[in-house]
Amino acid sequence: MFPSIRQGMIRALVVALSLSLSAIEAANAYPDQPIKIIVTFPPGGSADIVIRALQPLLSETLRQPIVIENRAGAGGNIGIGAVAQAAPDGYTLGVAAAGVLTVNPHLNRAAMAFDPIKDLAPVTLLAEIPFVLVSSQQSAIASVADVIAKAKAQTAGLSIGHGGNGTAMHLTSALFNQKAGIRIQLIAYRGTAPATTDVLAGHVPLAVLDIPASKQLIGDGKLKALGVSAAKRVAFLPDVPTLAEQGLSGFESVGWFGIVAPAGTPPDIVKTLNTAFVKALSDPAAIEKIRVLGAEPAPTSPEAFAKFIQSESVKWGRLITEAGIKAE
Figure 1 (cartoon, rainbow, N blue to C red):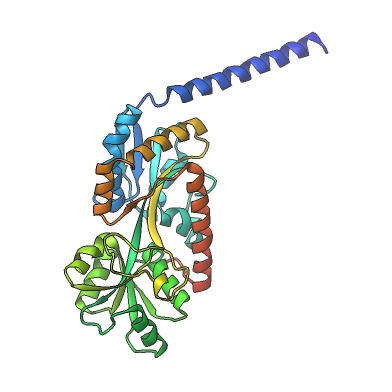
Figure 2 (figure 1 turned 180 degrees about the horizontal axis):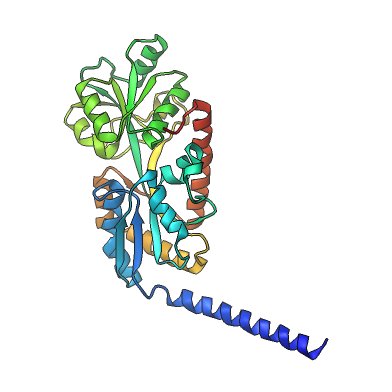
């Protein structure tokens, strides 16, 4: 081998080794500056409350300030798009919900500037929020069996209100139709609040609501809880059977949100972040704050969260196609 070629190869190896050592040193030094977490919802929402409950615990473990930035809009596409485009150094994270990671790609892929699978690195699931099928006090409907019987009898005016096209509550309603073999009209509202208002007033006989929006109304006897969408009963409504218990075999649908980083974030940094979040989610005070919302802490490994995202995407993508759900 010519000396000049050999020397060039040696120089290239030295450069490569130096870069590798630099990357290792950077990972070992992480974090050495504040970490920003982008929340894709306005202040005061469930995801915002959960991350703010974890904020001091994360700061204590990681020994750096945790800066929370609310960047809502476009069903989460704006905020998570910013995360996907950030430097993969562990200093920009995002709180991503089921919609932006597993629903939006099937409803309106063209509106997304990123690929949730390719452009993001899952860190951990944070929390799950079950839904509940409710009826108004004015309605004679008192059980899931009543709903199905009336639907099959083609009772006029039977409908289910939900929080908006493409939301998890919309998909839960569509899954209910599919599992029960019925075709109840689904009515989209611009958010949970107006759907709740209309079912309370009896303008719509049924609604699929999240637990935070409905648990007090159910507890006060203003709404009748017919069934919860989780795989098992929830602590806040222990006497309300699941939809699966009431004949809809395999029914499971929950809202959820988790932490993602830009793709390419070094595995050691992802591991460091995962460890910090899992520790925070195990804190008794944080658990209590999350459960007060009607949510359940659900920490996972990065690998488990990645598999969960993929399985949820397949599940909801299939339902969107079969139910003919379109973007507004």
